[in-house]
Length: 111
Image 1 (cartoon, rainbow, N blue to C red):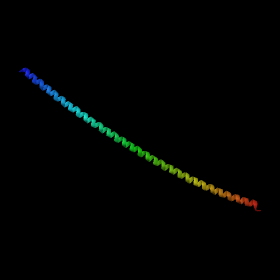
Image 2: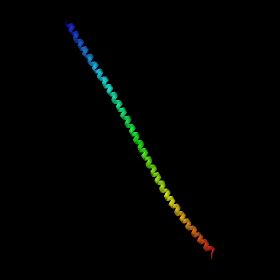
Image 3: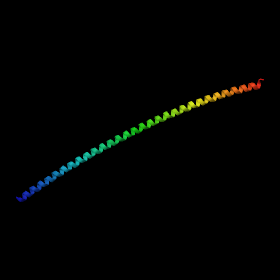
Image 4: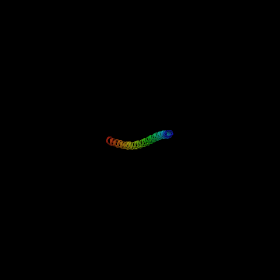
């Protein structure tokens, strides 16, 4: 009888150990699944951050290019205005010299 009781106790202990092992296995599997979800979420967040950074970089580059184009256009316009002014001043001086030369020739030719 005692041997039967020992077998029953051993059987219950083994059954309890098997039950605990199954519970631990279930907890480990749940933890793996949760870790997998967290890794996926972290990867998705990293991808989003990278996309946002790339979009900001492109926007900054476009803004810089726009500023550069505007500055280039401004410098060209200033150069054009300055060149136009200098050309007009040169024309005016040349006309004055032509007038002086004509007067000088007329004085030399006419008594």
